[in-house]
Amino acid sequence: MKKILVTGGTGFIGSHTTIKLLEANFDVVILDNLSNSSDKIIDKIKYLAKKDFLFIKGDIRDKNILKIIFSENKIDSVLHFAGLKAAGESEKYPIKYYENNVLGSINLFKEMSLAGVNSIIFSSSATVYGEPKNSKCDENSHLSPINVYGKSKLIIENILKDIKKSEPFWKIVNLRYFNPIGAHPSGIIGEDPKGEPNNLLPFITQVAVGRKDKLLIFGNDYRTKDGTGRRDYIHVQDLADGHLAALHKLMQEKECILDINLGTGISHSVLEIISAFEKACGKKIPYEFTQRRTGDIAELCADPSFARDKLGWKAKKNIEQMCKDAWRWQVQNPNGFNR
Image (cartoon, rainbow, N blue to C red; front, side, top):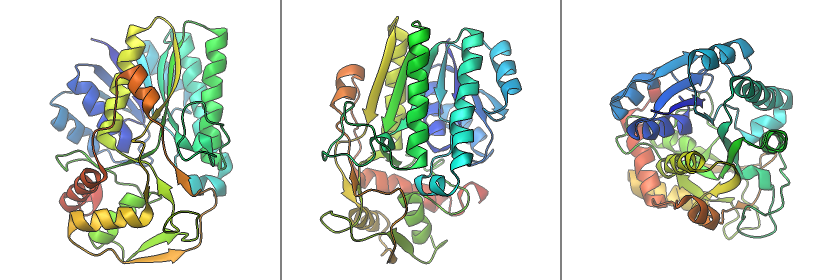
């Protein structure tokens, strides 16, 4: 049984992916500092997967805890989710983002190398493309992130590529994913950010369930059809399947370094998402336009054809399914994991 270290495994994407790993009979070790998640999700993952796993509370910036993990566990591969992820917040606190995302990743890669672990899937982001010239980004699109969050992701990608040059036996997949939304179809786990939501869907669901009075839409003067930003939204379950496909790819290859987009290839505006969610929940979502956030762009959409060719992966769920699953999670957990 292959043992996988999942950093940030109790977070939104990490938790859904961990369930898929356990269901596929991988042995899992999770490392998470719980800075943007809850320890209550640990038992929920075990319940949904019907499998046990090792959870370690800790931070990737802590070299000692990484040494202990690699010395006490025969890790075959790493799925690296741990990191801060809000574009707007990153502009306010750049040092915090570089320290956590970049320094933490360097510590992880160093301990992997010392332990002889050379297989990794890195949770990158479509923000590395910045403001693309074309409506859809493929993996060869120009890389020019416009916010600190995106810059930190690109720095980490480049570090991994430099490691690959010096140690050719490393196997690396950088998964650049677009905008994950939705929830597990059971409604038992979903997206539950601590503090003010930085992403659109948690904000909408909290308005719909009565935790917030109205949705704030950051900008209605973008050069898009309705003036609001457009994004490629992908169901978190499809995204988790993409990680599993990438892991199988790494296991098959002797040498591998790939950058791969995970998206649907279809973009939706903020107003279109609100409309779809209103149909899912049967309620009107009150909203108010406010000024743009620093680091936001008009439109970002994936060309997902490379993922289909290299991984045999394709997103299956549409925007209606994403909204229904997100609403089911919020209805069953009106106060998130603190119900």
